[in-house]
Length: 135
Image 1 (cartoon, helix red, strand yellow):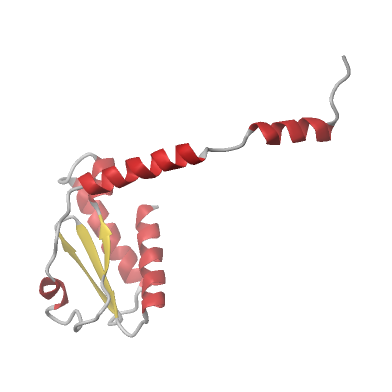
Image 2 (tube, helix red, strand yellow; image 1 turned 60 degrees about the horizontal axis):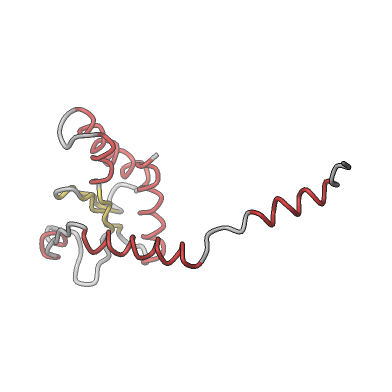
């Protein structure tokens, strides 16, 4: 039996990996929606976050949920949690110039506010900080 050509084998390999079907995608989305609907929701009053120099009405505050990181650590108390919070503060301080933002912890959330930035730049800064903390 003759071997298939390289292009023939490559074409066969690509044909066999068609990816998820529309039914698979629908099922995945449905399960994600169920998980979101069943998730515990915490609320924070705007006056609690924006008081004390955090900004005025319409100010953008970025929130990082620390709960998934606590689950990875396996606890909400102890040295690892203290190190996580210290990492959040350190990364924020390294990425944001003095007087150009504020950060605070409330419950399981890390709040960030950037001074003199538009929403796009603020989102970029928050995403950079969150990714660095996650890493």
